Amino acid sequence: MVRDWKELVAQKRADVAKQLPQEWRLPQAILDTVSAAADISVLDVPTKCGLLTSKELEITEKYDAVDLIAKMASKDLSASEVTLAFCKRAAVAHQVTNCLTEMFFDKALERAKYLDEYLQKEGKPMGPLHGMPISLKDSFNLKGIHATIGYVSFIERPAADTNSPLVDILLANGAVLYVKTNIPQTLMTADSENNVFGRTLNPHKLKLTAGGSSGGEGALVAMRGSILGVGTDIGGSIRIPAFCCGTYGFKPSVNRIPFGGQVSPVADGLPGIMPVAGPLAHSPRDLRLFLETVIQSKPWDFDYTALAIPWHPVPEPKSLTIGVVLQCPTWKITPPMLRTMKTAVEKLKQAGHNMVMLEKFPSFKAATDLSWDMFDIDNEGTGFKNIQASGEPLVTSVADLYTPPPGGRKDKTLDDLFKMNIKQLEFRRDWLRVFMENKLDVILAPGSHKTAVPHDTFRYPPYTVMWNLLAYPACIIPFLKADQTVDKPDAEVPDYDPQAVDGAPCHVQLVARSEQDEELMAAVELAAKALNA
View 1 (spheres, helix red, strand yellow):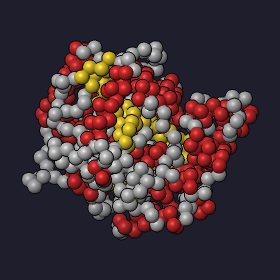
View 2 (cartoon, helix red, strand yellow):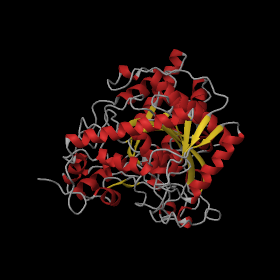
View 3 (cartoon, helix red, strand yellow):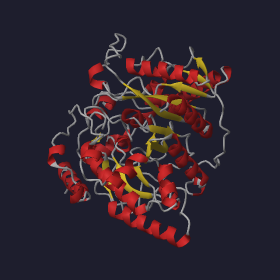
View 4 (cartoon, helix red, strand yellow):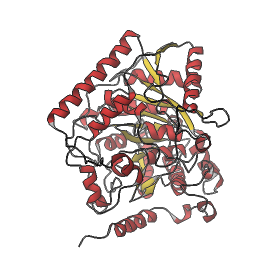
């Protein structure tokens, strides 16, 4: 007998609730203020709730990952202290943003104890990530932990019996894994809501989206319940949560970071735009720590899909030639983002960088249309069959973006795929021309035409998916905030609501050519310094 989907969800939510220690639960007075309609920030809840000690607040607020790892290596702090602090802060973050899917705090504390003993016995850290708590998007496999990826039909699947290759690499380098984070149904919208775990809220303003599909990571990192998290990105799924929640987010080139061994919402072997894994963090040097550590671990020995391209040091450039895509005529950006982009251009120019204002470049709307056609090449509709298998309904953002037209969805043919591949190559050709003719090091562009917006209104991500289509690495740098007193309504951008997004984080995006992740990382460090981000 097939169980009712609501019964499965009720049981799963009860199981997850048991993972939250009673002594780490927030007072009801705080919980009563939390809702998807609340026009409040919860960023200060960890500091004010009284559940974290002054030392735990210092650990989770004062340092980045590079600092904490150095302090653990010198025994100024123990892995056990650091892990406990982040477990508690993650528990608090979850109660006000609904950012977690799995909590395995006991396992994390056992691991931290082992790492402390290892350091004492061996006289050296296990690796460059020794003792560092790292959060994972729900899709990654970790032995003994479930990965439902927001599908009710996946709830009764057994817990993972193997690790994703990236998980093995993180553990081999001394990381502590302690939580998995929320995602959207199908993993293909910018609103991290599903029927299994519910909706993740933006800690800057609960009524706004936290982004997707790595939205749980975005919210958790913004709350500093994690300061180094791992997401994935096929259309913007690292970068959208990063800019919605005011963090850094780095989308690497395809297969530089091992992606294999995850639970997938789509058919195995699906061609087209390839997903990647990458970090969300609070500082450029934490991004570098993650990228260097993983790639220097020879991921091609762990994952047969990973490219055997060693990390190569790049001399720090004194100045950059930066091509600027202020906005695309086919997709206007909102006033807060336009102000942010213009301010960034001026600051980078003042810092001595050569800013080239690009007037001619491929259409972001055409790239978005092509990308969505490529995402829809599975005639079997595997992602939707996973929904139908339990009888659960589509969540709002999925129904909005993926409900077939009145005449029904037209099956794609092999000839259609060939034509899409040709168009994709034409985009690569045209962007190469832009880079070479202007002698560019990187491109500065918006990561989105807007900031975080009210739930279920984000829809398409033209300024992120372009770079997935090209397989270019790209990074979000948090910069400025929306301000309704200066960002006035614009008739050309009718869906901009100054009051709704007031105070939402703004950002810029840096982009490099394929496999130039090292060059992009160096550029991000320089740009962040100039922007004081």
